[in-house]
Image 1 (spheres, one colour):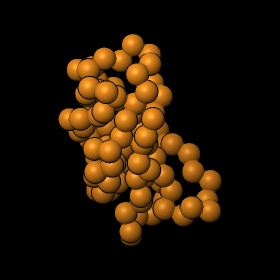
Image 2: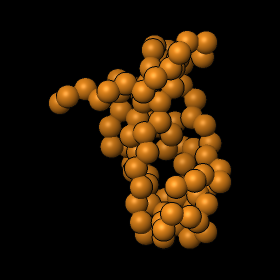
Image 3: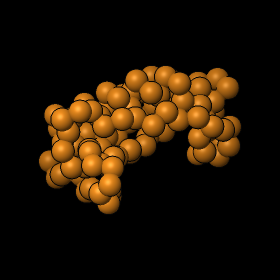
Length: 95
């Protein structure tokens, strides 16, 4: 999967450390993205997943890799509240 256009979500104010969310979306016509939902996020109370959903309405995919309208895909996005700190995706809490 290759993105043609993906809005970069912002870290909500007041968040500390690394925030991440796993989102599943459906491919629409012409590489558009629709029907996204938050599968999980960490920390559980973060609003980062909501920011991802807001941006996905403007996202577009390159039509490669066999993705067709109606197919679903899952991505995990993460960010750090401190842009000067090293930022790595965290393991999901066991639950």
